[in-house]
Image 1 (cartoon, helix red, strand yellow):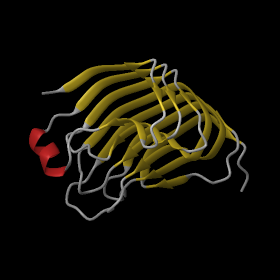
Image 2: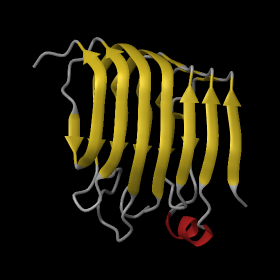
Image 3: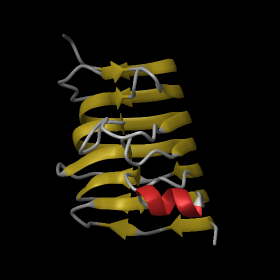
Length: 194
């Protein structure tokens, strides 16, 4: 069964964990079924306390594609990330076509945007994850400690991230970018000074 064509609209999340968690199977089961979650729209939602506003993984061995998040409000000093993709080489799988636009972030505890191939056990497996084509536009943040935290693998970098027309304040930590190819930042500003 394919999980596709999902609309999440006009919802409030205050959960203490991932607000919206998009998954497609864990390890062997996910690879056996090979059924991606795809074509998901998230609109006009309000995310409060949680580990992430819109989260992909970590159980995404079947793949995730075409996720669109727009016109959302994320505001809580205990909300870790606005957009989070988490995986490792035990999970494998792919993430392709994640798009966020017109989102207002009030307060974020850790980083606005997080892509992490070293989640939990790290790089100890034989199934290399792939992340392609992530676009983020017209996102503002008023109290964001860090804008970007992205860690791919040298043998499998995060590919094709574009961040445009975004503005952040309250930034106290420099961006973390490891093994990311084709990162484009266009008209992105923050008040961080090293």
